[in-house]
Image 1 (cartoon, one colour):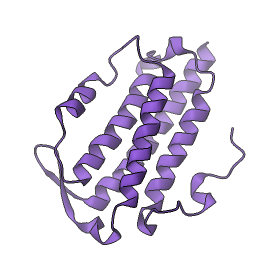
Image 2 (tube, helix red, strand yellow):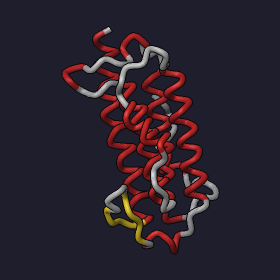
Image 3 (spheres, rainbow, N blue to C red):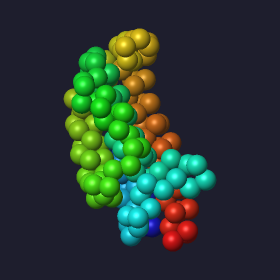
Length: 169
């Protein structure tokens, strides 16, 4: 495991507004932990669901997808057909998907998310936002902080699943 301190202990992320530093720290911490734990992961186990837990592939697809969807809502936009198709495909076994392709998609989404955080004005965090077709009420800050919390929750579940599957190898 990495000998560096956790991301939040390394100081501010350049360009990220102060109030959004915890979001950026969480996304970058998740990215590091996911990459580290997937080192030497057997591709044959990518879709396995030990003890009924979600697969490694699902978690990677879901983290990427939720970030995309939450940041779409944060921009006061509706989901596109492409986003809805990706949502429907999360967790469905696809033999063409690799660990590397899933990590590349996640990395790209984290890069996009960090760029959107950089463009966010702190004064706007209390601005109302709606989620989905029902326009469930929240705020811009609520969406952004939930993106971090949700990412870390699934990262923890993913790491446990990885450890179980590596132990079963």
